[in-house]
Image (cartoon, rainbow, N blue to C red; front, top):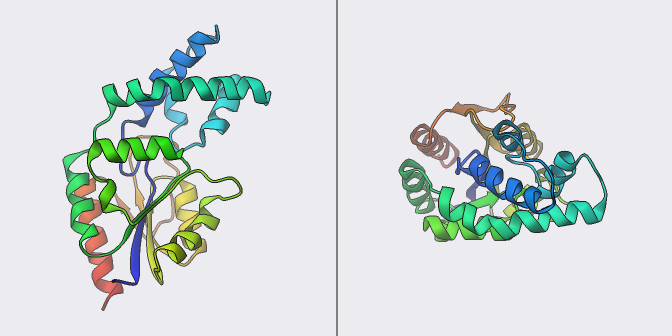
Length: 215
């Protein structure tokens, strides 16, 4: 087994439908609470956020009961939103299938476990990953990366993401960093070792990096 691993953020990196899912589920939950809907632009800002943090920002409140009500409502409507809006680009599936034959792959995400597993299963790519890291109390991605590497027995890693946190956490752990530059989320993944703009380019770049790392 290779001692090199590739770690992927999920939303905005492998999957581009999060904005639509969040827009639908959040607004349905807000409607149940008698609150006005958010715009698509605001839904876009929730991409990559931990859902409780997004709930606090949307509600402009730290009230735990209020936040929990919105949180529960979002996950009540999430399955329907996923069924209607979720699809993974064929180039992304090809990349994951190709890379998983070469090195261990892992998800390093702030998303909830049920969200990740349901989508990865729906896309038929769950078996590509040696480990799926999800939102875990007390852990940010800087702390998560060494735990993932320990679990999958990796000595070195490439961190791939679309947010500043992905680049920063990868660098903090000595990873080669690859940033997906797209029109989703914060668009703040600046300073990575490599920038890519689609999944085909991501696959080519990662294969080239792995070739160099394993020489």
